[in-house]
Length: 200
Image (cartoon, rainbow, N blue to C red):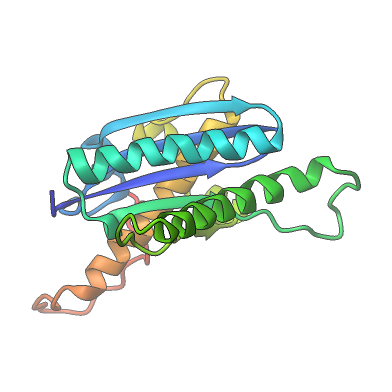
């Protein structure tokens, strides 16, 4: 399916939210993309950091196989997005604030190690290990609560799954923006200002 891309988003922490889905490249706005989404879902993981890393990686691997082998989505159109938690002056002390970092980085290095083992045993070529990092502020500013409701991905009582959907929405918008820049310019009779990212 050359006209489809897939996104798997992770909001890591003590309770980690996951959200995923497949979307059409022809959709011009985030709202259209969510309206036409398929093979989507969400999940919350609560466990130790180590077990979360393993479980997130397992779920990604299963979905990736389904996307590439079952739906025939090109590997470069399968995106893993992880929230990039940044420590600041107001970050509380202790181990709890470090959990998002430990889990997010753990997933990346788990995948990296798996790819090295794959090559070590001569199991064939695999695509580069890519993770798209997005900050909480970027996702929250773009995909506010009302927008999640308008897009049909407001999950009541599931804060972390909602956060994961925010990251999915932001990645959709960035993909759509990139596609617009790659397309030849359309003829216009007058110049108009457009917002950078189309939400609806």
